[in-house]
Length: 203
Image (tube, rainbow, N blue to C red):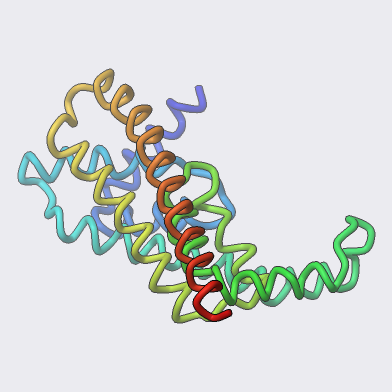
C-alpha cells in the first residue's frame, strides 16, 4: 500500500515536469525519508523515450538535493546546536562532544560528506552532523554536490538503459548499493592511509 501511495505521488509530481523532480529530490534530501530511485529511475526512462531531457533532469535533481541538504544543515546549525547545548546532557551529549565533532568535521568533513551521500540511509542524514559541527558551508556544498551528483547520475542512467525492466532495476540497485559501499570503504582506507602519511611527514 505504501508503494502504491508513493507511486501515485510520483505520478502526480511527474505531471509537474522538472519542477516535480526538484520538489521530490528536495524532500528526499531533507529529514523526510523518500527513496530517490522512485523519482530518478522513471525520469531516466522518460529521457530515453525523448519525453524529458537528461541534463534538465540532472539539474532539477541536483538543485532539489542541494536545497534539501541545506534545510538539514541550517536546522542543525541553528536549532540543533541550541537544543543540544541546552538539553544534550539528558542524552549524554556534552558541549565537549560538540567541540570534538567540530574539530572532526574541520579536518574530515569533506570526505565524510562526500562518502555519506553515497550510502543509503546516511545520505539524507549526513547534513545534520555537518551542521551541528559548523562545517564550512563552501566545502559542505561542494562535496554534497559531488556525492549527490554521482548517485543521481547512476539512477538516471539506470532508468535510461533498462527503465522498462523493473525486476532488473531492483537487482541492479542491490548490486550497486553493495558496490558503492565497497567503494566508500576503499576511499576511506585510502584517506586513512593518506592522513597517516601526512602526519608522519609533519612529524
